[in-house]
Image (cartoon, rainbow, N blue to C red):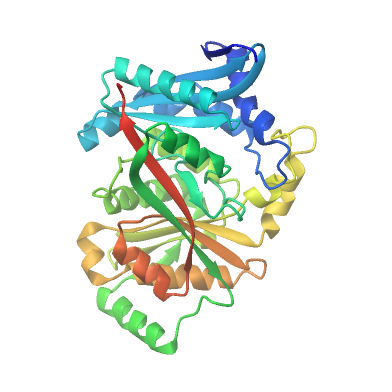
Length: 377
């Protein structure tokens, strides 16, 4: 067997190999959803707005001249300052079922993090909780929803045998037309809550998109500020993400709860599950034909992902969260194409939210696990 070598990515050619690695490993799996290569290039680019407060490193593992794995590490100064920790994130992890390769990738990424002064490594995340994250440990039989991670079952063993331990679980909730219902009693209760709170529902105004995005994320950042693993998303990153999502956004699925004074106090965003048409784009490239299913099929997908939902802390005592759930259920049900939806992710420790979702007929469908281990061994 050829000698194993983990090489740092230093240039454009190296990034091209780095992006191509998962296609080499998983490309023959018909259930694997290829990432859009241009999106991966964007996230690892030194020009990405998050790089203003992140330091990252990328590596590819080779046996001889053959790429057999990859990994990345990230130190996010904003996150560490906000949480009061010294974490190095490990992500963009892909490998064949080869413990030698996997261990070498982990040692390289964690060693780099330790050299940067970090005491703990957490992952997988591409690169933090504001990105795709978590190792799938339950729900392998389902297609991953947009902006969620997918991995084969053998990854779990590779992580755990290397000394990684559970840090937090993230849950996905599945809704279907047949099982997601609100009784008349529940609806009357929610009507009373809305009247007492004196809030109205309104969808995002595309004609004022930039300001609407700012209002949305002001609420989102406030709502999540005390949650495990959270750090507020800076405005340049918000604008960058909004520009990407705008291409597939349905304005009816982006809405908020507003007071009579015009203050947004609760928000919700669902997006069409563009991963369904991505199953047809096996190369991960838009050209020559990859653009077609993304442009046309995304408008007819049967699944949606409820991506973000939150209520300002000073309004959470009014039980406005269920109002947002009712509204998104009704709005998705009004679309004849939508048969199912995934709400993801929620923290396993967020019992209040999880119980509310279950009460509406949702079932837990997937579990992603975030792991941690000491940076230095």
